[in-house]
Image (cartoon, rainbow, N blue to C red):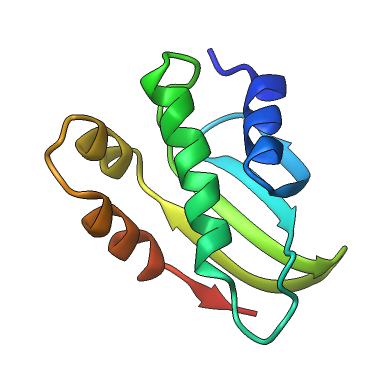
Length: 112
């Protein structure tokens, strides 16, 4: 079972301004970007993934599909991205590299 308070705290500790976090499959997270330019900041997505990977590695979260939305302000979507549970599991099992994981996530980015 996921501890949403713990997940939100991890995401916030990694610099994400979490606007909403909803339990389930998928795990839906909306965060306010610190980079409100024209493109989604891949480093923010990376920080979110690292926080979730850490939680999974420590047994605090069981990977599910993650659907993330970055907003400039409430209702002003900058972009979205997602990550599949299999990607988290493969990285944790050393079946893929961090670069492969990151590439898969970046390939899902949709602007605006």
